Length: 203
Image (cartoon, rainbow, N blue to C red; front, side, top):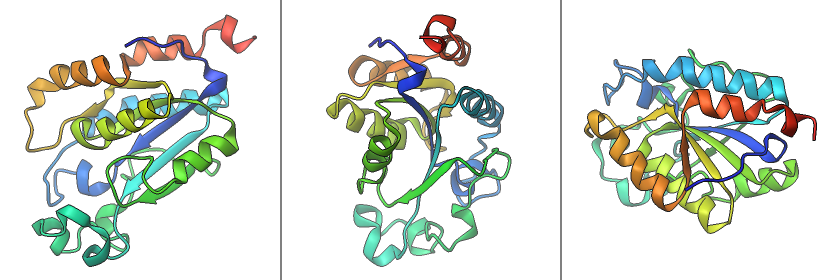
């Protein structure tokens, strides 16, 4: 799919870059190091342009009550997904600023629970520049939820990746599916050029 990106209408949303999913020493042993610099570049430019930056964490207040269909996963049973767990802390390599927005949800899609809907309405925004992990879970869920709301989503390829138990070499295939049905997949270079397009900034 292809959309027209208007920076004045957009937010930058980064999902699930919590230590549980990003650090090689975590229970999932996933190393998301290659995503850190691209995400920091994307969020830095967003702030410079006045595009709101939103961070969302996938975590449970109470795993026994909140986890739903994954309540029997060993990682859930052992409390790694709890909001009180250090593993659900945002990866410290990622830059956050005081004016950024943060919220927690207990399902993969970022629209779950209504917080993102409310935030977009309050900010007066109707497009999403999207990054984070994982491509077949939170990224895919969020893109499809946005599509159902007629909200264009731009997934930045260099800022996402598959889950540790998925084939990392198949990222292009995964993105092709989402890009066909629910979003536009863009490179970091391309999206940054479009974010800074003079005619859009001065319009």
